[in-house]
Structures are given as structure tokens and as C-alpha cells.
Image (cartoon, rainbow, N blue to C red; front, side, top):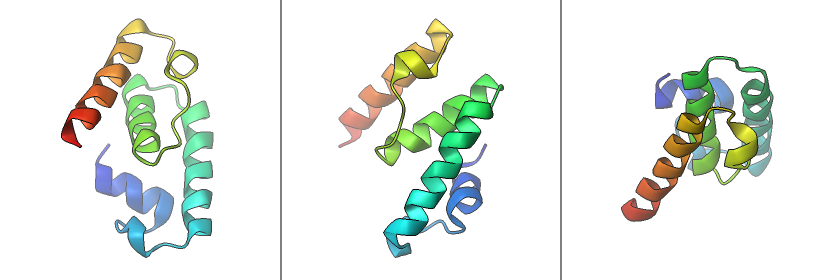
Length: 84
């Protein structure tokens, strides 16, 4: 799943700065629904990462059943903290 593809799918734009808050909220809601329905672990992880970048990610322990997925999410958070 490509990052730009996700942005276009949920927000119809790759430039979130140009969107109204209502459009972002609607896109986030769609992502949350898809996240809840998604059964493919990699796609779930990709959705979680984008939700995290938007400040809307669900809690790691509730979001992932596999320990490896939880570890990957924690590593992603650490990498994003270091990138700041």
C-alpha cells in the first residue's frame, strides 16, 4: 500500500494542508472503519501508521493481536520521534 495512494483514497488529495477539517475528519473515520474490517496484517499496519501520523491511531495493544505487529508499531513510533 503506497502512502500517496492511501491519501488519495481517504482524502482525495495528497495535500492534507489544503483540506478542511471536516474532510480530514471524514477521511479518518473511513480509515477507522477500514482498519476495523481489514484482515490483512500488512494493510492493517499501513492504516495504523497513517492514523498515527494523523494523531488518530488506536491503542497498540488493542489494535494488534500479533506481538510482532505491536513491536513494529512501537518501532514506528520510536522512528517518528527520532525524526522530529
